[in-house]
Image (tube, rainbow, N blue to C red; front, side, top):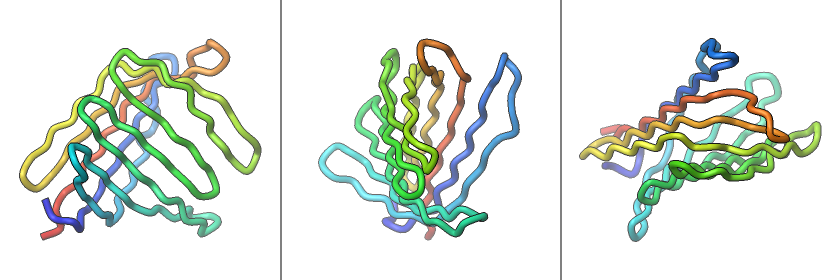
Length: 141
C-alpha cells in the first residue's frame, strides 16, 4: 500500500436496538508500517468551529487503538473480549466511558486495509449504546 491513502470511516450507533443515522468521514491520510504495527494518520475539521482534530489509528494483531487530539481528546483501545476505560476530554469536561469489544476484524490487502469494530459503550456500569465502526484505507495511486 502507498504512503498516501484515502481513509473512510463509517460509524453506526444502536440505541435500544435501533440503528441511528450513520456518521461518515472521508479524509486524505498517511499510512505506514513500523515493525509489526500499522498506522493510519489523518486530520478532520469541525464544520462549525473550524477546529482541527488529529486522528491516529494503530493496528497490532487483533488490537486496534484510536487516538484523537484537538478540541476533544480520547484514546480508545479495542481487543476482542476486553473492557477498556477511556477518558473522553471535551470542552465541557472529562467523561469516563468503558468500551466492551465484541469483535475486531482487520483485513489487509495489497492496496487497502479494512477494519471492522463491534463494541458497546458503557458509563457508570450502564450500557449507553452498541456501536459498529468500519474504517477503510485505500491507496491513492
